Length: 152
Image (cartoon, rainbow, N blue to C red; front, side, top):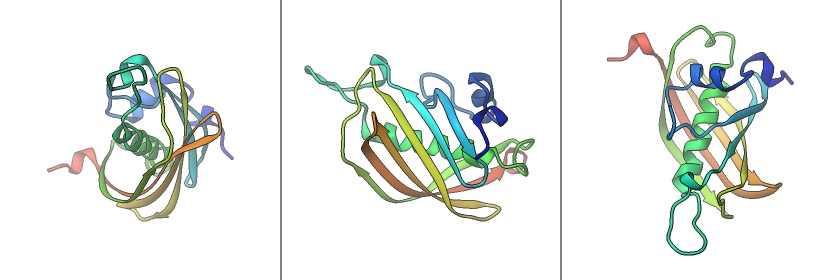
């Protein structure tokens, strides 16, 4: 497995690969990258990330899906053929998305995304999120790619 230092040594590398900026940047670190196969990333959930009234505000499920998408972009952007390109990505289809746990402020959300199928212009990705080893969400989705210079 290729180590994260190979592609994403820190926040500056993540910011260079993603168009997102705080407060919509949902990847705080990359633990490992198996280039062309899988990525492990982390989102440290802050009080400003959660929503809800009452005593138990939670990270909205749609934010979990966004975490999966951003980690997927980092995975594809780590491939040698994509590293020097300005890659644009958009979500095509969410085939499945299940939430089975809650994420609250103070949690370290562990994100795993793997490539199930890849062509030059799309990828089918499987994703899983957990907190302290307990699963909280899973998804399978399609992402489409283009070079920024090709954008209409």
